Image (tube, rainbow, N blue to C red):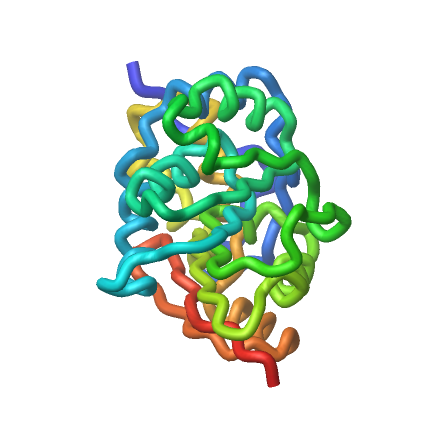
Amino acid sequence: MIKKLEISSEHQYNNHRLFQRILEPELMEDSKQVQAYAQADFSEPNEYFLQNLKALIGMIGFEGYALDLGCGPGDISCRFAKAYPSARVDALDGARAMLDYAESIVPSELSARVCFIHGKLPTISLPRRRYDLIFSNSLLHHLPEPQALWNFVKRYAGNGTRIAIMDLFRPQSVQQAKEIVEMYAATEPEILQRDFYHSLLAAFTPEEIEEQLREAGLNFEVERISDRHVFISGTFIIK
């Protein structure tokens, strides 16, 4: 039996006008969450992100050091390393439980090229001063302060570093958020449906992201690539 998502009274907003962002927990440390994410199949959205990332990189391919921000269970980090055998990936996440799972399933042939790092933006110090590529999927909406991400990108990007960030964007109403959950996650466990719904409420609009980039002095492209995803991309240039 498929359970319908129930919305608590605190989330009953006017469905006919854009609502304000509602923060969700920044980290996924709950064991039930980790187990649910470990068992869920995110291959389709993760592969979709990689397709957009590969389009940014181009036909030449990639050799060098990549940084995956908010890597979660590490699926995208490993998929990227498989696709680019000359790449090395530092994969960062603030949830120790997620990284424990990621480290337990990383293929042995990738273990020398994918390094999982526990830490939170913006205080963590990484092993490299600069990265050739910085990418992230579904981190931005978790952050209470979005400039933590953009300042971190500037801190570890060098001249010519390519940036690729995909995230959800906030729907125009609570009703629309419910419809998106029912369309794409109706058969998922209730905990994943709730997380998805709360993530939609916590996400930024494309216009808000453009304003964040202007504030950070970053000239990246912001593109809606689906009915729920936004893709932020560009090349970091030191002025």
